[in-house]
Length: 215
Ligand SMILES: C[S@@+](CC[C@H](N)C(=O)[O-])C[C@H]1O[C@@H](n2cnc3c(N)ncnc32)[C@H](O)[C@@H]1O
Image (cartoon, rainbow, N blue to C red; front, side):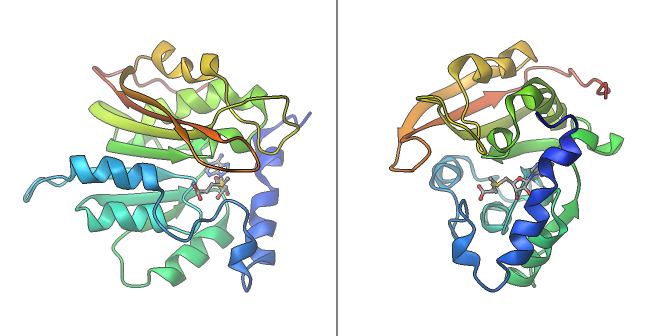
């Protein structure tokens, strides 16, 4: 068991560095926008003069952040691995996306309830289950009142000795326990070595609930 989240996330930086020249070996990288985010954006583009703020958590190579920028959002894309951010910045050199090295457990105070839309895909499951509740709370804290959060994660179907550690239904319910309402819930199917079922869940924050996290 890893006793700090820093130990639990330290390996990501090395993995991106080791695959700088062989990005196809990064196991989760699609090299294109996540199809579930694409589906969301087809219905939800901000209109004209609205300037909506979006956050991508654990942005990896940046394709999801780019799709949000293209849809008209002002985007902050965070990752704990500087090497991932370097690759993303290289891939999208002309974008206005703010690629920031941030740890979701230690977000700056100014990002508390700052984002109208938050996208999380596969970061929660990349940490052992003992970090689940804190991770959920940290993610919920970034969503503005009336804002939305789209979570994509593998559904746990059998014992899986991670990483990753796919999520169970009861763990997805933690978002509601932290004040969010479910707007859309789908089990999406796609072949994968981890599990063929994914949670595709859209939440809404009805009112402010921001708390300072306890370490
Ligand atoms: C499994 S990858 C998924 C990457 C991307 N979301 C995707 O769908 O391709 C998880 C990402 O989360 C990042 N990450 C892990 N723990 C994090 C944390 N505490 N704060 C921010 N990013 C984190 C990792 O560096 C990695 O890029």
